[in-house]
Length: 252
Picture 1 (cartoon, rainbow, N blue to C red):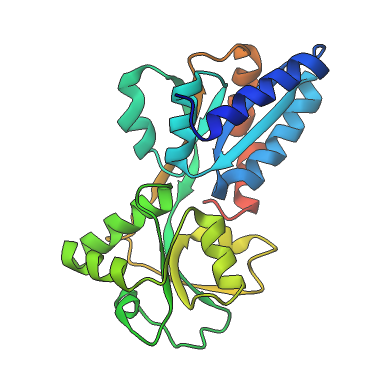
Picture 2 (picture 1 turned 60 degrees about the vertical axis):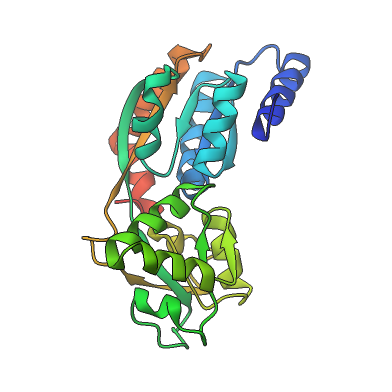
């Protein structure tokens, strides 16, 4: 059975066969928080290599489920190296390059009108909270780890039950804050630097002993049919120009 993004992958490949026979098309499975810098790099590679790069964006787990089902595509960039480590044994991944790291933070409304100070405020009944779905994307999985490390599984369960809703991914969480549907969330720190988010959101850092830095590994897929272009994409991503693009979007 083909699920989720896998249908979209097959549709894209069919359309490419009809309309882009003269240009190779690469499929790039990219976690939402990294889409903006990856789109910039993709634009550069498209011009240099006369190719088309289709970015499929979503939660890291959903993207992995899609690539493993369709067995079509060229690159995968989840929001944490946890996915690469967990699924490497299945043989879908080849070379990986380190391009920076993600780190979670507390997200609040601009100016912090609720005077939120710490993770403990996630249990405050006067504050509307949202956490990422642990079964969907990297921020949900990371949030669960942070809360358990902070005060244990019972604390996580109470936060989970107190949340007004679960977020599917980082974009969903930011949208809820911008629309003032919630007062507080945990999200990937880099996304607050985006132009569409920074006027509406402030962050409160979480102690690194709870919110660990999550390595970002840009990974070649074994079934890629465009390995020469993928190689050049990886090389550019780790070059000075590639690193500068990542820094511009808040990735350290």
